Length: 139
Image 1: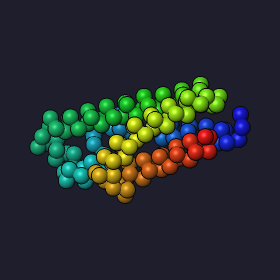
Image 2: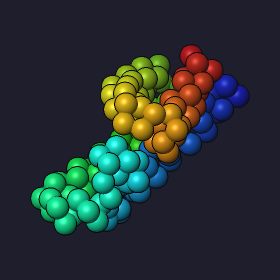
Image 3: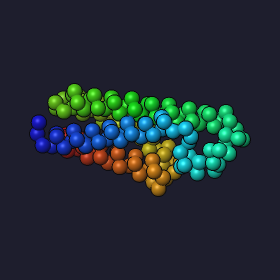
Image 4: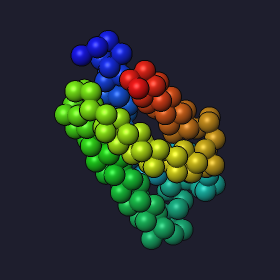
């Protein structure tokens, strides 16, 4: 495997690991994130007291997003391991399209809720940058 492809593979594994880690945080969290609390203007404890169904729905939505992120991260790992690392041209396009379809809406929503200063904002921006560099050097 040539050096550019090796570098891209490592960067994409880091990208996939970040997605999986993000998913795990959301999946195991018993409450909404602090940046969600800032957005809605209430602490989770207050939300649970005032509107328990909304609190439950918020946590359930968080867990669904977490599970989907884990599934996407595992899909990336499989694509990288079995296709991309072997130089398969189609895998390059699949990874690119999957990333764009997933991360553009996530980035738009995250940036509109918390801006770049919130944890998901800079994490998402960094992940997109790592993925973009990896895809560029492997093209």
